[in-house]
Image (cartoon, rainbow, N blue to C red; front, side, top):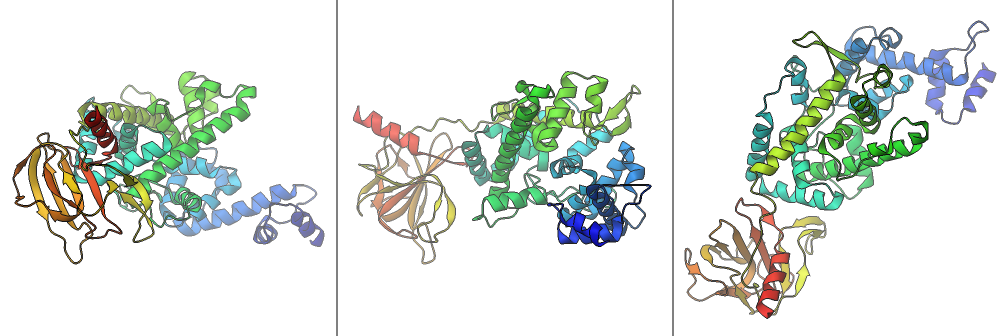
Length: 485
């Protein structure tokens, strides 16, 4: 036994705990059944994993009896995913002896609720994409700051805003506390959580790569940024896999992905993992028996028969859903008044403009932590006149409060429904009243440092007709250029 233990010690990737498991569960090889140290370790780890599974499900589990029956094995994975939704690392460890990648295990059980519904109702009506896009549009109307997070993720990772919007809608229906539930037990099916349906192990990696982040998957800002990060990481996985295997002609160069790739393929990678996407796309392009055999075990699981009697496989479930995501994106592009609304000002808000802090994430000057800055700061001497940037109606005149952070500020409502906001004013223009009509260039106040300001400046904000905060800087620059012509 000492010799046997020494052999195991020399296997570089084994921990002391794993060696102990081997000795307790794997047992030594006999002359009749010689096994390598690695084989014995796997046998021991498999027995331990089967015990953990048995304890969770309350019934005997034998992987060797089910791993060749794709439906039974898929059902077992789904049940264990639900049992270990709050201990995802243990769930992944149970399948480690079967040589399954964590990303493959995650992909096998990670299905949005609406995708699961396709199992019993594969015929999706044509108007589904429009309904989903309308729902996304309404959700962003109710939560306009989420648009800013989507815009930021699109800028940071290079993906279209409309695509990220469609991903969120089809993953979580814009529910920041979304957790997929089993239809019978009403208990969680996986560790997926939040707008991006981030799995526990994936979000932990995200946290390690972004150590300053303190949020969890239910925080919309973190969830949307995670979506861009995870998709970028998956694209890298796909392209590395192609580079490694292209010489063996497993996957062509054309299967590589980028932020500009078709939404259908990007979603397949996001939901099925890098290797899962490659195998699925290869079979979709060339549905031969050989390529079917090359699908992952979960993709080959069948879900019974359709109306015409043909089998309905998991790979079809995922490919159809990916197509729905793409259709939802296109529908959202059509119905949204969005995004690319042109921001135009007739005059800059100050006689001379000097930007001191831009739009977007920054380290807050008072709180010294990372926060989203929803406007542009322009430094100027106290008392500098502040102008209405275009015609409108005074919607609000708000004096400073002891606990206020905005100081004295004015809001102007413009004819197209957009609003401009002018914060930290030293004073309001004499005689200025609510509902007063103003023209471009009307003096509405003077620069100050009231509220949460570290020095005299104007915090200038713009909200589009849907109430969404947008970056006004380019429009201010254009107004200055037009003024100087």
